[in-house]
Image 1 (cartoon, rainbow, N blue to C red):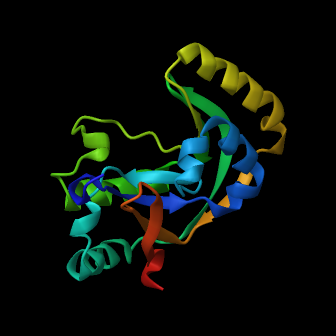
Image 2: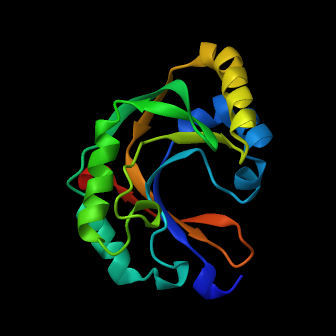
Length: 180
């Protein structure tokens, strides 16, 4: 991996979910876990190249997200995309607001590289290229993880994750919501 290939992401880490979903993520999303990605809800990915993170960018992110208030949410239900099983946050609106701040500030960096992409806030638990395997995963998660839902969480900060030279991800900086 060259420096130009290293990516970054803006996320809300769902730290409270780790104890509940950690084993499921290891089973269904082991590569992400092994690479250091915590359970999270993506605000903007891909963001800038990891090598472009500098003091000016960090200052700008701090300024952009300081007016946003911290909020409580619950990871309430198991849902799916054709290639992923995920937990839906309730309410979703505060995540949409954080995404819109990023869209307005960085129009050249649309979510998932697609200017028309409609962001669905989610905390991924597992991925697979085979929709049938995802369907089985969702059934198993609903049966076994479902009774442990909702997971109560709190978003107090936005986190900038950066991809390291070996392909792992690391927390580069956090931006307190509310500017605390």
